[in-house]
Image 1: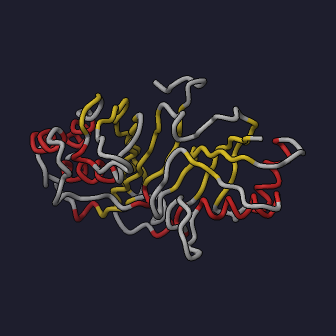
Image 2 (image 1 turned 180 degrees about the horizontal axis):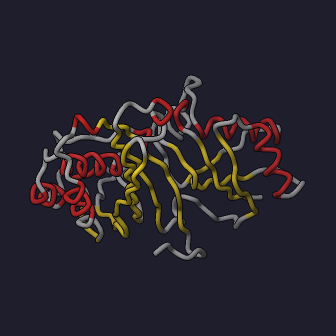
Image 3 (image 1 turned 90 degrees about the vertical axis):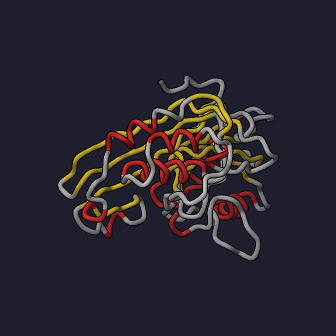
Length: 258
């Protein structure tokens, strides 16, 4: 029976999602170990996307074939009982035998959190990019917001990353926007980007370049010309991984967010 599940994890302790040799801690390895304990044999788990070291997820979608005769609800409970506290299955159900979480996906959504803070925020260091506001005194939020609106559309996004396979760098970005919330310790900025697929480090490179626009290191016109160049951007900031979360993967039977 093939099962489909939604997976959430804190990626701080893991070297990305994908299983690696020599016992390197990864999210895939942890989930497969839990399934092996339950099913008595190795179970390969497939995912919608391979998140990098330190990247988190609340909406990762996985699938596996498991020899299990006690129903989806019992499997859901059993797997969660074997997972560490920083990884959890949030939903699980039987699915079609040909369901593939990567190739059946229509859209993927990521969110990136940045904190422009008055001082260091030790408790936020694993879930946000914390920036001291006194170190970017001329930060221009409006420029960063304007730059984000240039991304939606179908084009060659080769400036923002390399393809995980092959050489096709054409992608469709459906949504690219910032939201801001003022907190006692500073300003929280959340960037949301949704696309049909992403290039390697595309979101982190995008956020870093948007930050470069906000702090005046790159003008709006330079950002636009770089975006349309099709050549991998060099000399730009790449945002650190801890602020990034895979939040949603959309499939044909589900309504897309608007």
